[in-house]
Length: 213
Image 1 (cartoon, rainbow, N blue to C red):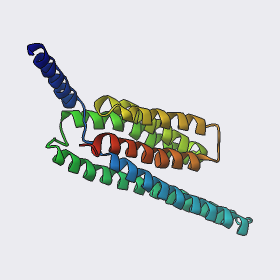
Image 2: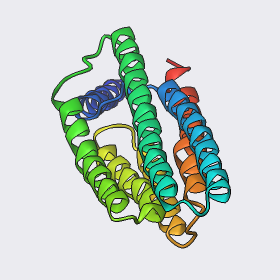
Image 3: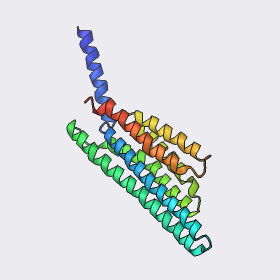
């Protein structure tokens, strides 16, 4: 009987140590919503690109008009991407706060700070590098770059939260590398990686960690 109690105590101590070293308040539902935002953003981007192509056919001989249309397209696409990121971030913060409050856990502590720092270093680096690619007119590699650096960010952050996020990162990383070989299809890879895979990941996280607790 004492041995059984001893083993139970050891298990409880291990669980407490694991919780103290990992941020477990991430919401699976926020992943689903982030994926939906990404798919909406991809749809808006696709329509904008198609409109730009149509304008080229109409105004093919007017170089100035083409140049202005391209600049407007770049601004629009960057705005849509930033809007998706902002909505996903705000949704994640709100739902994570609700989950943390539900489980009487702190949303902002040493563990969540380490998680954020390790996530942002690759992500911000990739964001700036993507802007450089746009500046240098290597737009066709932007989607692949975003997927690769986002995958690295997820893998880097997985040490401080659910390990499942590591697999999401690996999928994004692989998709990004494949995308480099299919120039012109970046938007489809972007939609699948940030949209579909986020919905799948978020649903798995929700049923695995959120719904049962």
